[in-house]
Image 1 (tube, chains in turn yellow, orange):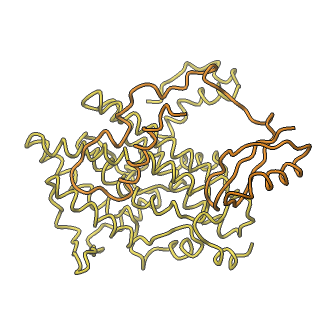
Image 2: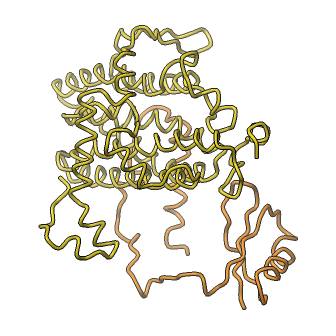
Length: 313
Length: 105
């Protein structure tokens, strides 16, 4: 199939591994899905320490279930990506370990305190879900199928995150203050989740023309703000003065893009941001620590022979 | 030889098991499947798979789980205030449906 035909045919779930797709399509889809898969994995690693740090058994169970889900989402997505025939799962995981694999800006920042957990588990997951719901209509069928399962599970993540936020914001004065501070720190990053504005987005036009992407960065950011600003206010969070956000007459929002730190965003996008490198190397170390498990599963029993089994953390 | 048949109603949907046909080879199995399973209900595509190629593991071989109370991993377990995003509501509805069907099959 040539590119023109692919653009003409592009529709929800239109293409499957049975189609002979142009290289441009397969490369763009691989780039997009690999980024998504890497983000699931890196997000899971960011949240994993909070299985131990959870303040109650219920939170511990829920966090453990959530982290397990996210790793599973990563695996589903690598599968959807490798079915395009451009890169194997091993190549994608190796690239993630050696710092070449790209992933979401928010997962490059360290997360240290429990009050930060709803910033990821409610706001970032809520943002991700806004985007993922639109991707159930993507043109690459295996990607859409992965989104079906991801969206099925993700509702629990968002509501659990919201429940933590509700608890913190109805807790002690100190908890409320610390949560507000965490929100102020994370808010600009969360807005940058959707990437640069449409006029500065390099990959959008092609991805949209072949039906991979369903909505632009601006549309998604608007849909997110529309839903989550009222939610934040409801729990008593104050929206920071910067970045400036203006509500238009039609109820949509305009963000003053110049108020956001785009130098930092693009440093992160190149995997050059120092704290992000710690995240990447931390996952690499965990991956290597449990190599003996994979070797054992693959039947190469001798490989685990000389090494004392290690825990990943 | 028995071939299990999976039907897909519309492009992009899942192929779900709908029955089987007896046929000596793959070509005949496809033709029989089209006649027996693709004529009455809307069909976009059919798969035929030799029965012996299907791997099965059942509840006598393994304890499948799904019987422990894991309400903490369902959206329905969390009460939040205000209107939820439509996709969160949709996910919660899908989970509630799955929860209701638990034990039905």
